[in-house]
Length: 144
Image (tube, rainbow, N blue to C red; front, side, top):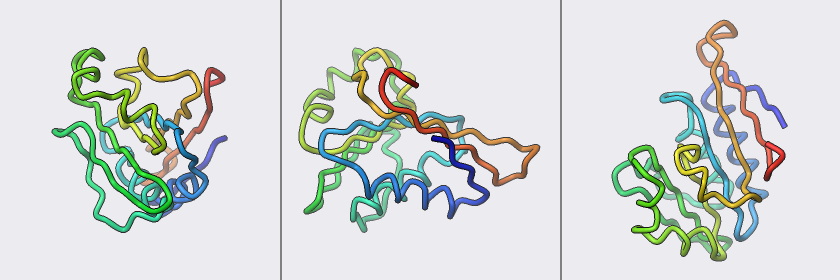
C-alpha cells in the first residue's frame, strides 16, 4: 500500500490507523532518511495502540517499552547499532517473539535478524512535491 502525506499530522494519522490494526506478535520495520518523520509516524502508531505516554525515539537506550491493556509496545531505534550481533546483547528475541508489538526504526540496519513476516514501512520525502510531502509505502513479509 502507498499513502501520501502532506503534513506531520497526516503522517501521524497514517501511523495511528496502522497501530489500531496491530496484532500481538507483529513486527513493524520503519525505514527512511533522517528527519523524514519516522518518530512522528511512531507517535501516531502508539496512539493507535491506546498509549497516551510521551513517545520519544530511544536512540541511546535502543528500546523503550510501553504497557497497555491492549498490547505491549516495544519501540526500537537501532540507528546506533554497528553490528546486528549487538541486538543479541539486549535480548531482542524476548521482544520480537512475545505477545507485544514491535516497531523498529532503522530496521534495515539489522535486516538479517528480522523475521520474514515483518511489515516494512518506508517513508520518503520528495521536495519537488512540497516541503512536507511524504510517500509512505507499507509492504508485508518477503513480498516487499
